Length: 300
Image 1 (cartoon, rainbow, N blue to C red):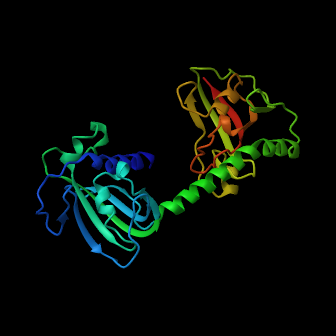
Image 2 (image 1 turned 180 degrees about the horizontal axis):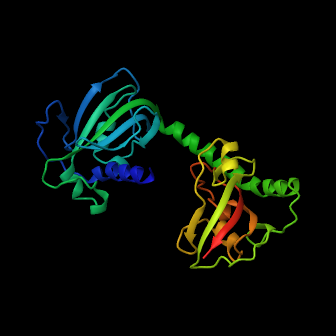
Image 3 (image 1 turned 180 degrees about the vertical axis):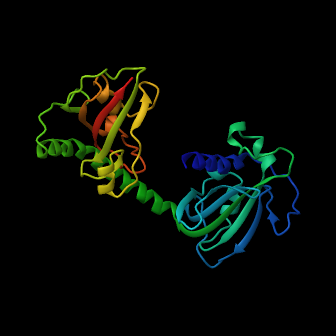
């Protein structure tokens, strides 16, 4: 999914470098001076019109001819900001739109390809075939630039509060769970519940680890333990198998299991600075402390 989203972003951003060129005889479409083809399936000219800096909300499908590259059809999302540096020549079409409009915009794929890296173009693209990128937009709502700025300010305040509260939440968790272990200089807790006697985790060795990851409030966000998955009502994953040093794991995990022998059961309390930090992850809020229950199944 992330790859699809990155591709969609590149395809939108890539339109910014197109020159005014190409024919205007695409059936059912009109063409702007900048070379953007457009067609409105529904227009609500009495509704609110998109202004510079607004954020579009609704549904968008991006396709190369008939091949869908990215879509959120049936699911309302924030699509993109109306900023020229982001949406390029598509910006001209976006500024035509009103809340409630449905429109399709088209761009010559060959023109776009001139200004993109080869790996940014979809594999089905063929130069000289007259292919086009289509952007089908159902504009359901508009977040004004003023509303968006206020949201950003509130979000930053919430994040600062979360950052300041994290040490207190960790201290309360440690106290409530009777944890006697001391954190290292980075704030990482390594609580060994059962010491194994096999080969130790080290760089270059292949390890297999069973795990359950929780937030401090007990919410399970990932697990390979069937009982924990069943209790959380979530899909279970296979135990994590990787070669130490060859997989981009969070620092708290890497440091916490390093040197631990096969058969060890331990718990890691990982502060956000050694986890996902201020960015968070899809199921992990920013500045979240992570608690991992781990069993090192094998070390080879």
